[in-house]
Image (cartoon, rainbow, N blue to C red):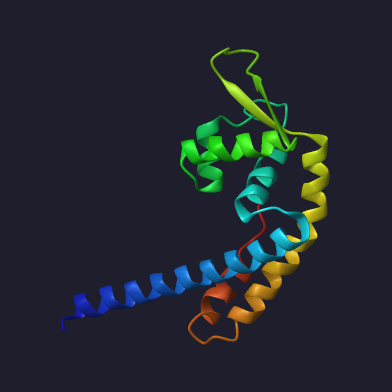
Length: 152
């Protein structure tokens, strides 16, 4: 095996560990959000992203930006928005400056549910990270996640 092969093997193992950590965290949070709030991780993420919009310049996200933020395709994001709109958690409206654009806002019911679900999400995240930190393969990744600065 060459040095390049060894480097690629190490890279692949690192990617597998990162994927495993992500999967475990997401599954743990999913169970907690479903049990406590009838929300999926994707639904929670969408509500969270949209709740951070503002009325200033560039404050409202286009569907492509929303899709990128929640790591879904545009069509999957549109279906997710429709489901949450049907539940009364989101509303859509035409962009006032470009009638072709459609924006999505979180309703009062959506904001209430998001605020109720946030502690569940945060607790489940902490639990999942604590559990993963016990695994020697995942512990370094947990430390990196914990060391990341909070967004401004």
